Amino acid sequence: MKTGSLTIRLDQDLDKLLTKASKRSGKNRSEIAREALRRQLRLEQFEELRKRIMPFAEARGILTDEDIFSQIS
Image (cartoon, rainbow, N blue to C red; front, side, top):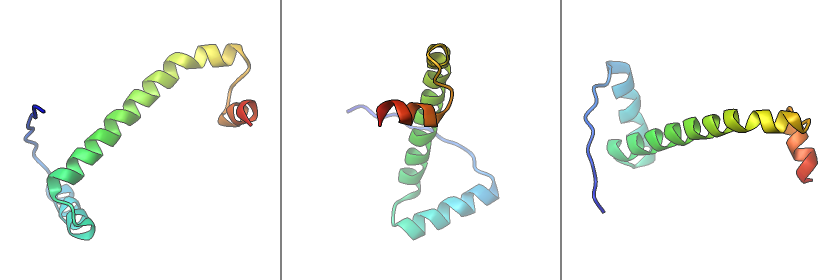
């Protein structure tokens, strides 16, 4: 598997938070940063898909999460 690398600059507060999270979890800083980046990118992907599908859902009267749950329960 090919891998890439990324160098980022962290402000002092974020650096401290990352270090604390690393110590607390037992994961290295890179693992935590990768997981956070992966989560953020998936969240953005989800939000984009949700935005694209909303007009179709609204046309069927599905306006809230509760509407969805009532359809699948």
